[in-house]
Image (cartoon, rainbow, N blue to C red; front, side, top):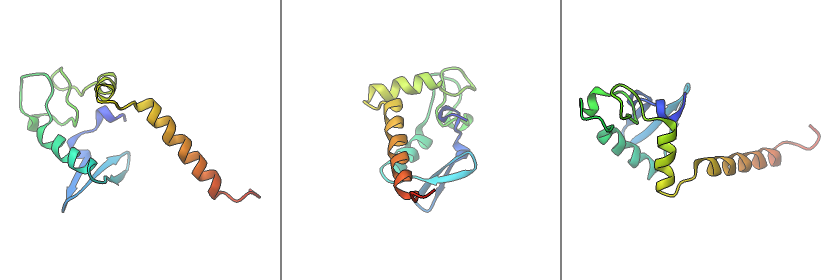
Length: 108
């Protein structure tokens, strides 16, 4: 599953806590990300003029009715606001790998 295929059903709002299920495990989101996801769930809409947000299951509805926004379009939108997904992902993976190597005993 890609981010573009997330549905509103993957978002769990519970007593102010926001979690998103990626695969089988829900991940609790920190603020201010949680507030942004709450707003997205309430106001999401695609470019199509048909239906309402309640009619569309996608967290990121696309321009074609019944379809999510494409990964490429999400990437373009992120670039417009200064977020570089590939660069940030690489940095996160490098940081994680460095953290794991510090935690693994040297004799293994």
